[in-house]
Image 1 (cartoon, rainbow, N blue to C red):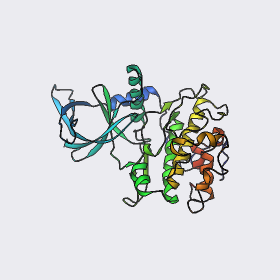
Image 2 (image 1 turned 30 degrees about the vertical axis):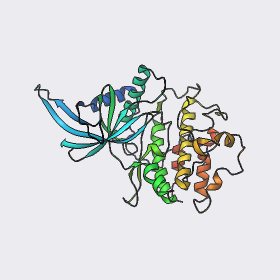
Image 3 (image 1 turned 180 degrees about the vertical axis):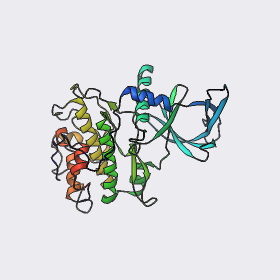
Image 4 (image 1 turned 120 degrees about the vertical axis):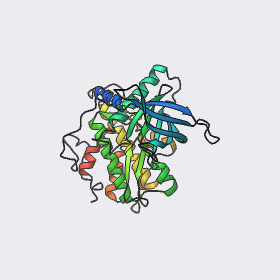
Amino acid sequence: MSFHPNNMANTTNTGASTQAPPPKFTVALAERLVQEAKLNVSVLPMPTPECPNAIQVTEWYRTELSTEFKILNIWNRAELLGKGGHGTVFLEHGISGVRTGETRAVKVLAYDHPGITAQQLASLRHKELLVSIFLSQPWCERHFVKTHSWFTIDEAPNLGMQHLLGDLGAVQLTPRGPIAPDHARVVMKQLLQALEFLHSQQLVHRDLKPQNIMVHSMPPFQDSWIIKLGDFGSLEYYSDISDKSQIRPGGTPGFVPPDVLGYCPNDEMNTFLQACKADMFAAGAVLFIMLTRLAPFGKAGMHLDRYAHGEMPIGFPFTYLNSSICGPDCKALVQFLLAVRPAGRPMASTMLATSNWLHGA
């Protein structure tokens, strides 16, 4: 590898655009964008034997010069796409209006957290709504799942999102196996570009895993890989990057680094930087899984504690990355990302600028 893991200052992506920089994330800006994206809707139950909870969603608006209601689109919601800790996603079909014949994914924000209060639920929903709309703007939408609009049903925010092929685990890793190194390089570069943008905005994803990486296109069905990062239910905004309070644990077991779990020191980093380094560890776990279809530390990270304390066999888990799977530059990148201590993990901007493997060398 041609980079030093601590060389983070003044490092930029050499492929970056010369256009004016995007606006910085602020709560005030995100609030304004959220209001602009809000839709009025009415809901009609449309139960079927296959989906007794099916509904029809009608988007409408009222003109300034009239009290009449104008119908914009009508959607049928009759298929469940998935359910997780941060909400439920449905597939909707446009049956009338300007988006007739189109499909969209709609995420109903609901948090399956035991003991959560109504106030906490409202706060979590609002945070995810703000970030989802901000990351759907033209300056960054190529990196993230786009939320076109939103509305409320029974007080729950519903995010109207682009409908993609599925998540990386469901459409590739489970049915098709590991990803060839040349293809994994394309996916990894796009993932790091998304993280580079997030971190530049003082935003940290905190739950990076294959299930939260959505596939827009992939060979052999399309010419190339295009992925988008999604699910911002665990994301944090660090308004004070100098804060050194204890990091709040978050993420999925197997993708959370040892320092966040208290298995090793945090190298006296501020909370924001340590959180960024946690994203990088998760990115390393994703790359390892793409190349091998194996979890680097066993199911739910069961071997992570022993790995952090040097109690696993020498070379674990990198012995799985033999020469038939990836070359030395690729293996070294995974090793840096999965470093036990956060100081050993490069930032996304550093890797994008200096990694031989990412540049195809």
